[in-house]
Length: 287
Image 1 (spheres, rainbow, N blue to C red):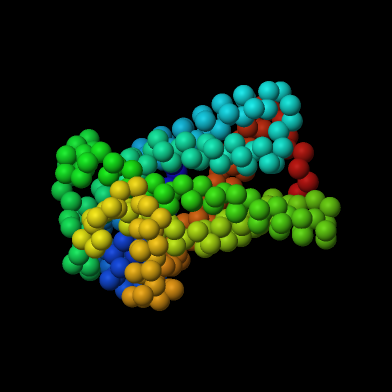
Image 2: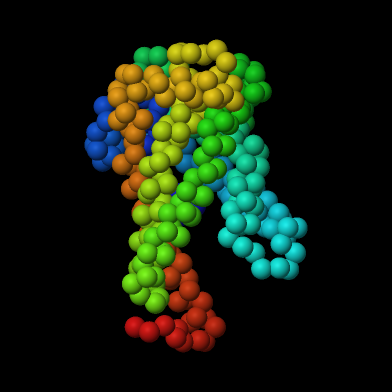
């Protein structure tokens, strides 16, 4: 929650560049300055509460499912990396199926009132989370709440890709030294996350477009984001803007990802140090 709040403007810039295809792909700070100039100082934080609420629900569902499945499957034995990956994948799928409606609603609330460059976008007028649910069900049908489910399910592979690169980099470093420092762990974690994000970013772009669902283009058969629609959207982007069109907003996403990892690492270290102090123990780490 802290990381998402601190770096929320980066997420705003990323989403605008993904959804509003006619917005020029400028540097992240330029996009944010444009948003503030056109829509006010607080515009980069629009939709903060729905996003934080979804994040809490999503994390709860994921970790509750993960730990429940692990308890049933492992039953006191030592868990293996393979088992963790499988359980993580299943927990990710359950999470997507249960929480996609929340992410559809918060994507729309986050973009409500935005000054779009694309005239094909139909504006929304929701008074809050409950009203957004009501209007979507009334105007588009209940299945519209699961727009973008298919790309979201494909994105469940993101942690597996990250884990694969992380383990590979760790093995390479351990050939040269016996132990990894905290900085080494942070750096290889950040690199692995950046690679996984870059590989899956076009799918994240499609996911955002389908969740927003306010484009007049190809309105038929958009529900759930079938494979045909994903290929159609990817093809449209490449045809109009080239391969770079699939990566609009990647800079903001990578900045957010790496800075979030750094912040979490910092908070973790501080909490560890504080815990040692409270318990009256001295950290035995070598300085």
